Length: 278
Image 1: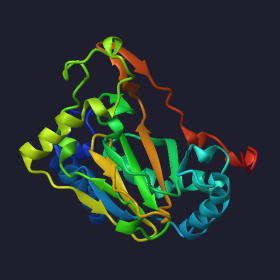
Image 2: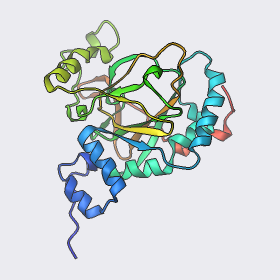
Image 3: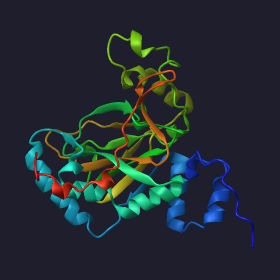
Image 4: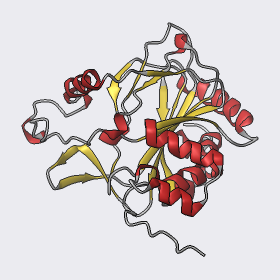
């Protein structure tokens, strides 16, 4: 019997490791899991069908319950705390198993954003708000609760940007304490635009049918295209951390002084025990 290959870089997600092929050979991943891992490795994002027979019911429940609550508002954060269907989507066991396997350590959902309307948004990346030490142990899953076309204001992402370094504000020439306004993505826009032009990276528009999901690495650049007036864009965006990391917000950090984030594992809570509506 061949001796198991030691993972000499456990602080790097399996899909991003320079020893990816050795890890795959040892763990004997099936074709579906391997395709997801390779998609993450090559593009930083991969489209999957959201698993589970309960999705149809959960999506209908989310839209029915939150539509009345949201009114004309475009989204709500952390509706998992009082809407069981949002919680079920975020805590889907198959999704969490896949993310854990390709990451090399156990993941857990930490935040949800449920939207009924899209709102145009400039380029951003989740790692600006949900960074980890060691780096790379945060991913997100954006799942369509209805069919989404270009009229709905779809998600736009930039394959390959996960290979970029995670530049700090100091590297951009900024010190948070000296800024006149709070730091944000606006400070990174010139850098990102220049890198896209230099590397010839083209955007991909995610036009999913209901029940398709986009798994994205935390440092993949993405944006939201402008929607047509009145068109809904029901979707749930769940952020996942991995265990045994430090969690912090880079925009509030300076040098070694990191703004720590509380890593709430929402899978440990039961939303059915809370009030049904806010």
